[in-house]
Length: 476
Image (cartoon, rainbow, N blue to C red; front, side):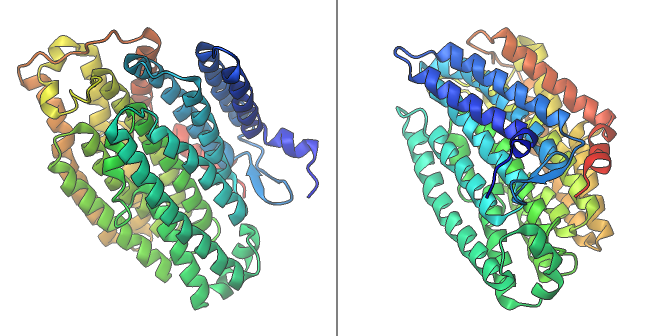
C-alpha cells in the first residue's frame, strides 16, 4: 500500500499525537528523566491534536487506501479523546506527586492510548479497528496498575488484563466470521452488501461476537463485571480516563459498525442490543444505590450510562448517532469533573472515598462543592445541564425506532439514579462534618475543573453547539 504525503497531512491529529508520544519517550529516556518536560510536551501535543481535529472537521475524507476516515466524524471524536487526555494529564500530576509516583511514562501511556482511540473512531476496516482497540487496551492495562505498591491497583490491572484478553478473543472470532461471509474486512464494502449478508447465520453470529466485544469495552451488562473493581483500584485520574475516553472510543466503534455500516434497525442485532441496554440501565442504577464508595458508585453509574447510550445504538438511526455523539461529549465532561474532584479529596491510603467523608464539605470548600453538585445534577439528567439533553436525544431516537419500551425503562431508571447522585449533594450541604481537601489544589487543575463545569452548563443551555456538528460536517 502506497502512503502519500496527502494521507499523512489529512491524518494530522493522529500523526501529531503519535510524534509527540515518540518525542516524549525520547525525553523521558534521557539520563535523570525529564518529567516536567514530558508533562508540558504531552499537554502541548494534546492541544495541537485538538486544533488539527477542529481544523479538519469540515473535510471528511478516506485515506490510506480506504482504511482510515479523517475529518468529520473522526475529527469530532478526536476532539473528545484529546480533551479527555488533556484533562487526565492535568489531574494526574498533583495526584501522582501526592503519592510520590510521578513518572513521565504515565503521560506517554495516556498519549498512546489516545492514539489507539483515534484509530478506533477513524477505522474503515475491521483490522484497523482491532489495532486501535489493542493499542488503547494495552496502555490502559499498564495505567490501571501504575501504582505498583498498592495491592488493589495490581489486582485491578490483572483482572482488567485477563477479561480484556478474553474479550479480544470474541472480537477476533467475530471479525473472522464477518470476513468469511463478506469476503472483506472493509466496512464500506460490507455496508454495500449488508442486505444480502443479514440473512446469513454465520454473519449474524460474527456480528453478535462483535457486540459482545464492544459491550465489554463500554462495560455493558452482562459484560460489566470488571468495571467496579478496576474503577476502584486504578489511580483516580486513570479511572476518569477509562470512563470517558475509553468509553467514547468503544462507542465510536459501536456507531461505526452498527449504525454507519450495518443497517440494524428491525433486525435481531437491534433486539439483542436493546436487551443489553435495558439490562445495563436496570442493573447499573439499582446496584449503584447500595454503594458507599464513590468510585464504585460511579462505576455502576457508568454501566447505567452505557445502557442509555446503547438505546441510540439499538435505534440504528441518524437520530441515534447524533444522540450518542452529544451524550459522549457531555458524559466526558461531567465524569471527568466528578472524578477530578474526588482525586483531590482522596488520601494516599485510599480513604475519604465514601459519602460520609463529604459531610460538611460545602462549608469548607464552597466553590468545589458547587462544581461537584453541577456534575451530580448533570449525571442525574436534571435540566438545564448537559446530561439532560444527552438522555433526551437517545430516548427520542429509541421512540422513533419503535422501541418505546426501552425509552420507558430509561426514564424510570434515570429517576432511580437521582437518589444516589443527589445523596452526595445532600451530604455535602445538609450534614455537619469537617470534610475538606488536605492538600493544596494546584491552580491550573482547579481552573480546568472550573472550565469543565462551565461547559456542562453551556451544553445544557445550548445543546445545538454539538448537535449541529453532525448535521453540518458529517458526509460519509
